[in-house]
Structure formats: C-alpha cells, structure tokens
Image (cartoon, rainbow, N blue to C red; front, side, top):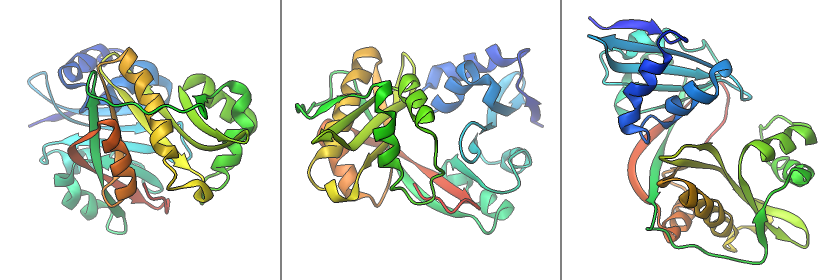
Length: 262
C-alpha cells in the first residue's frame, strides 16, 4: 500500500530528483519545491521509495492553487489534503471522477497543454513591443483592472511582479494594451502565462507579438517554452500555433468556489 508522506527539508531533495526525468510534466512541483518552499505544501504517495503521485498546494496567490498528479488509486487519499473550499486545481483528465466525488459542486474546464522547443519557433517583432520595467507597474495595474473577479493590487505589487517575472508588452500611444510573461523559469522549460489583451485592442495580433517576445527570451535561456490555454479559445490557440507551439496533451482546470475561469 502506498504511504502518504509530507515533503519537508528531510526529503525535498529526494523528491526533486524523482521529478527531474520529466520536468515538463511536473514543472510546477519541480519549481515550487526549490524556489517557493515558504508558499508550498506538498504530500507524496510513495511505494518502495518511488514516487507514485502527489498533491501540491501553493498559497501565494489570491486563492490556493492545487496540483494533483497520480495514476488514480491514490487520488482519494491525496484529495484529503487539499483546502476545503475556494481554490483552483490542475489535474489530469482521468482524475475527474475522483475530484467530482470529493467536490460535487466544482466546475471544470479543459486546457490544451502546448509546447515549443528551441529551434522550432517563429518570432514576430514590432517596434511597439518591449520588456516591461518596474516603472510600468501602474500600466500593468491599469490593464489588469479590466479583469472581472481579480482583486486589486497596489502599484508596488505589480512592480514587484515585473521585477520577479520576465514580461513583454505591446504599447500603443504609450498605453500598455497587451502583455505576456513567464511565471516559471528552469533550464528545461519556461512556463508562459498571463497572456492578456485589452478588449478594445483584440484581433490585431497583439497577443501574438507579446507572446512571441517572451517565447524568444525563453528559448534563448531554456530548451522549451510551454503554456496552457483553454481548449475552446480558438483565437489564442491559432496565435500560439503561429509561433510554433504544438499541443502535447490536455489538463483540467477545476474551480472550487472561486468563480474563476481559465
């Protein structure tokens, strides 16, 4: 029988080594265990000193973010360690029955998991695109204020984001109208996220430009770039495919009590 083990400083290095052969699949856990330890709680299902699955909860966002990975038999045991309400979960599709059994009121969405490898991307450039600087915090705050359900943050908070995470934006008349960034950077892969364009500036290719810029930096510094996109967001998928991203799988975005969608 698999035992459920809390991951702490005594076994963290062992678990990172278990994840290392497939960083892309386990990129959230691989990164958080090494660089976000103070915000991360993780339990692993272990059999004969081999990793069989895990549940990770990251606490530094508006709502906890949960990652569940296992083959199915340990799902119910691992789900005992997730928050009781108001969180977002990322999980493989085969775990949906176990998740819905535990959280029958949850809502789920399918996301395409897309990847582009070094040497396989096509980049799009424009004089209107540049890397965001800390002083652009007020511009980023203005863009994100248009998102429904997002809690307001201080300008300093957004400036801190820019300092921590590489971001590129499209500027029209000195107004930030579209941006894309990377929230995880490893030697193996950068995760691209936060791609957003103001509603009045959509369908003009701006998301392609901002995503292209961050992908270029990603592939200069790692072997691949990856992202998740809702499977019915066809315009975004087309934009990513122009750059070279290809679907490599699907994941579930599960909303428990937050009302948020991917």
